[in-house]
Length: 179
Image (cartoon, rainbow, N blue to C red; front, side, top):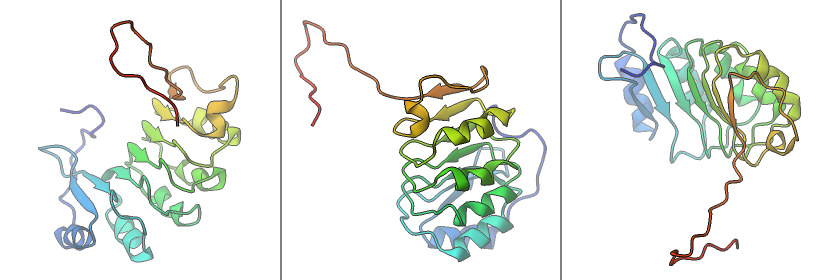
């Protein structure tokens, strides 16, 4: 069993809503084999419509993972996220989200994983992240947060700022070059 799936029982989600989401190319699957909680992904869906967000609000007690990566979600549209009280994992990488949009995650008290890679968040959001008591992993490569010299985040939070380099070994047969 995955430790991020809530232990408390919940009734099954509305099958018709899940069917509607799937018909729009939005994945909504059980977060675990014996769970009624949902993992929802907009992978491959560039444009998010207001009707999609309304369906997510209706399913909010069930959603514990949400993947909005590479979508056009805006700061204003992200306001629905505050209704996802059980949300544990949130993917916002490569979206136009900025500090003002990130404020919407404040009510997500159960959030443990947050991916902000390639977003427009800045050091102003560090205080918000520090206040999130359950947060354990934050990915901030290619953001202003990653560029700041010293993080003020809670020591319990693993902050991944990226920028990895590959060591060169004498036995290497491939050479990696930056474009």
